[in-house]
Image (cartoon, rainbow, N blue to C red; front, top):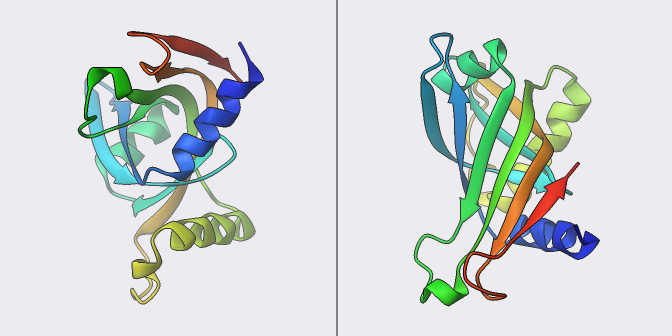
Length: 147
């Protein structure tokens, strides 16, 4: 795997605002959520209510998957996307939570004036493996990513 695709992945994450997150509940039923995110390197951060299905699920099973892609590429030959697996954790360290919040506010400045929500938690996803799909190289091309 070329280090270039890890850098392409990071650039792609910086230019996209939303991802689709997959978690699994105690009954092994999948759950998908669309959410706004920020990133630092290949690590993803998001804020959510602590009572959501995604948080309940990841507290039971921290293994998650997510995709970041184009909603409507102009042509199939222009499609790019990221498919990742990782470990999700609710951030408990106040300094790390503040850092994550600052990253989110840089990407979504419109949320700076929202009042604090005591039900909100910050979540971090550390990647374990994935792929960068790039149809600009050739149809179906993907580069494996290992972390």
